[in-house]
Image 1 (tube, rainbow, N blue to C red):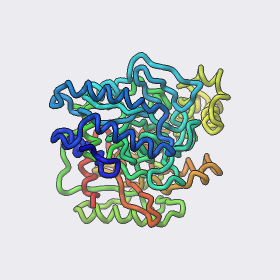
Image 2 (tube, rainbow, N blue to C red):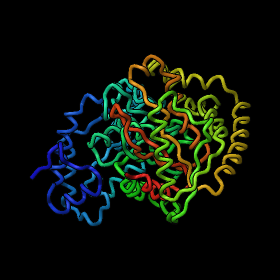
Image 3 (cartoon, rainbow, N blue to C red):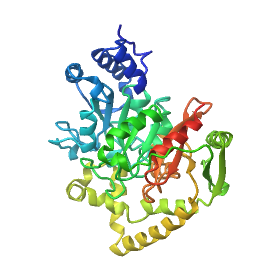
Image 4 (cartoon, rainbow, N blue to C red):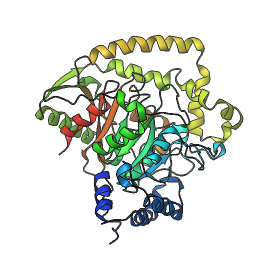
Length: 441
């Protein structure tokens, strides 16, 4: 009997169990997904939704294979449209930039080889420049829980596709928080892995030296399964040491906590802190100022020039094809000199030494995923400053080569979710997934 759009659970464990027991067939799964996609078409999730018949044909091909040899057998997924999929356009949410790659990105090929079932390519903030999900000519991606609110960016479509149950997992990218902020706004998990663990070959660069391919899923276990495949041979570099009973976690000193007036976010964050303490965690307040100083380097320093370097030839001849916010950010690169770049690199080295010392003997740092959330109309009225506010707890992570995991953390009284993020050392990705279990209800 075909599962209905209302009762189909899309987490990996549920889908695998239904497929294995015959309660759901792959063709039935595809039919149900496309019913849901039609029901939620006004969320502006997709830039390229594959034709249903194409996906059904792929599903029938999978039926001829041994599911026991394919760890992601039949699991539906989506890919942010700045990541190449062979034969499909890559737009980076800029139609004039569009090209059709002959080969898929390395990470996509690994997922395909593991039996995953691609549903389509998702909407994003143009050229992955933004944390809002509204900077796209394909429309603002609307929040899973309330369409008046932002979904978060830049990996907006990928997050909402998971949040609405259209796919079991998805790929995003994360340079400044794009794989975490949308997770917090849509009540899902967002894994921002250690730089280099997942290949960025076949990804349109935002800041090439900082970019990570991120994973959205419905829970940490699902994210870890996808990570095991997506990392390929690099997976062995991840720490396999499981957390012990006692643990120490850091939080920003109270004077540095900022929720931009959102008292409910502040209360929910405090509840998460208390939950970790109840689970045996030792709390340590640390100076957050060096992390904020690091964050400022990303958009207020010469790293913005790397965004121009990534698409310089296209920008030089096609800058008028960009949205005004995207164009303004990338044009800002021109005010920085080579001297500025080296001075900032020296400053980053100093900050890295300082932040490493602050995190010494700390298992992870707990921060709000974002300080607050805004309505789409609010972002339209103040697109630059409000976008900047959203990166308060995220912008420093890749510059400092840290790993991060955004997880759900309850709801506000208006029904919108709030998330928190665990931040750890490089290669601590799997440890963060284990620690996050302590935050579950």
